[in-house]
Image (cartoon, rainbow, N blue to C red; front, side, top):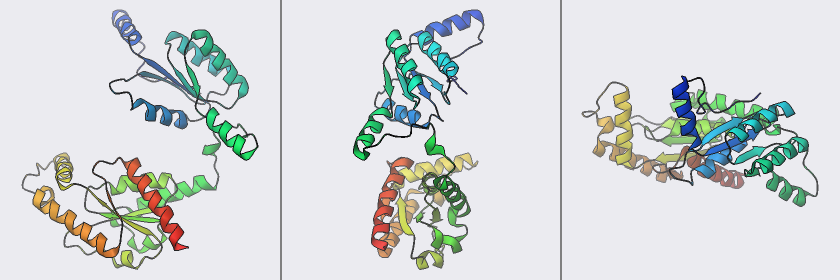
Length: 297
């Protein structure tokens, strides 16, 4: 099964369609081809594209390309809209067809996995199996991720606190410090993550203090930035928020300071998420978790 990005527009009235085609021809095109779900090639493309500011190529995405017929359709799209081709394909015959076509069309092509496979093969002194989509197999790791996702949902925002001992990680922090999305992201990595909010004048559950197994991490954010986020939250709920202590800078700064003090007293590491993406926060937590597991053995 294949797909192309919806930004390549079809089916417009004749004059508009021609104008749109002319406009598209003035843009850069990028072709992403995968014999599996396309997650790998998409992730690499995202990581590279952010380095090119003010450049937004039109992406043509083809996934589950495993037959010559499917590949020919992708090649026809490359010929119609020339641009670099990033691909992940393990079938040698299909890769040869694609690279030959790119050479004929004078467009750059990059096999995302090939340098890594060669490096690992040289180190392990053996060749890889070259089976597409193996990272998406329904193996124990897959079911661990599903279980971790269920765990994160069941233990979100201070729910089911009696089960905190079963967590790998417990995130604590004041409201709007990205605890929930970080837990969901960690779950996708197979980490059982729970989160408990720190609310003024509301005691934290004793089960949090009794839990010996999980790593407890505090998330914090710059008070001024936190106020902006909370005000947007209030407006989304139909409250202008000007008179609410929830978004009052002095009150919020006091909350953040008290949360930091609590974490320091308990010896819990703290991560400032003000200028961190969810992915960067999760990466820092995974590093801490690795260290925690090493010292817990």
